[in-house]
Amino acid sequence: MSQRHTHDGTFIHKALIRFIVTIGCLSVAFLSSGQSFSLGLKAGPSLTWTDFNRDVSGDFGTQPKLGYTVGGIISFPLKNRFSFVSEFAYTLKGRRVTFNEGTWENNATYRFFDVSMALRKSYNLKLRKDVYTRWFFNIGPNIEYWLGGDGKITTGIQDSKYTVVFDKKPDANFHNNYINDPNRWLFGIDVGIGADATISKVQRVNLELRFTYGHTYLGKKNSSSSLEILGFQDTLLANFKTLTLTASYYFDFDLKKSKMGRSNKDKEIKRKR
Image 1 (cartoon, one colour):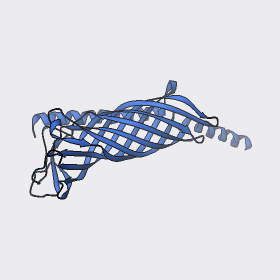
Image 2 (cartoon, rainbow, N blue to C red):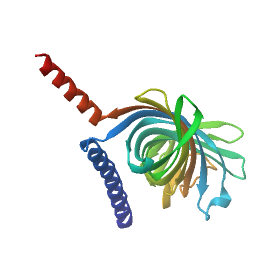
Image 3 (tube, one colour):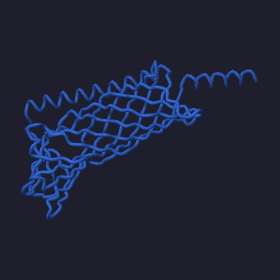
Image 4 (tube, rainbow, N blue to C red):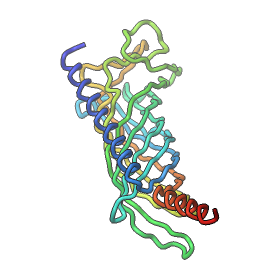
């Protein structure tokens, strides 16, 4: 392992640790201060485009890749209709790359663990008299950890399926895509817009359209992606641009009100005695 790779890996791991610690500290601070908060589940489809480095973009073509995301949400209200939102999700996306003058295609599906943090601003939106709705805008950082994947090479004559194998010396196995020295921690920016509707005193539904601008390439110049098939071409000098439509279901909690409710009940019990 080179000294440069060691330094890069250390920097990325430290950045990830700082990011997760920040989320944890903010969450603990909000909960300990007795603030209200919301817990939710989200899921929805996604569409991903591969964006290549200029040095290799002329050798490859790309098509959008369908995927999905499913995960959990914790949200804390702030002042002036702002809120802090943190999300954790399992994400499936990938890339459809054409090469050999467009006659071959690498259709890859990758699995990621996704962590994001955003600042959200909400505005009132009047649709129906008896339904309280809002629209919102949010922006914040995104981190993904590349778990693994699989795919299929289509040559026009036959199809060959493969499994992604990280950091292992290539051998004669035609069913493995050996990816060495990849960037498994991927950083980006989330920008989203959506609408939120209250369906009861403690339950809400949410619909959001989000664009994730991936910044980190899947690998570096010295990284490699090999498959023991004659004519196979690949590059890791590419990142993802993803559009996601998610539906979320929230449960709202208010610690102050719950404490006040218990206190009032205790007083009533004492009076009865």
